[in-house]
Image (cartoon, rainbow, N blue to C red):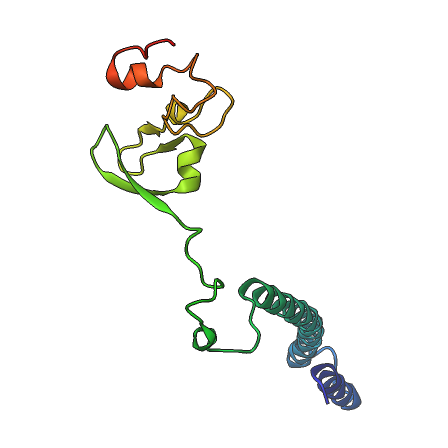
Length: 173
């Protein structure tokens, strides 16, 4: 028997007693029974909403478990490091190359990834100043990596790397 059925039973008992409705204590008793009836319906509504909410939370939990499984590649193997092979490239850290740069403004050293360096600038987390990285002298006019060997370079007629490094022009042939 749920709450609404219990309240209906009590209401039936009070009506079956044929109490005098003009007496104040009967009015109070009827008001209490009506209040209990209203409360029972409110509790029933809240229970239905709770059940709906619980079902939604269960769905979200299942979806989150799927995402975690996909994200962490969880193959029900709790100890993936036991399968680690030093010759295998699965756990290769060569992709994560970091460089230490020093901020000219505050003098603090910062570790930055190669990707950040290639972006050309970063804001110093210590002082907020912009640190710029200039790689323009590493590339020739075609955008190819320059090895500073101007004698072997197809750009030797227009290249001024030797002039920048030594302060003198390369003799023309």
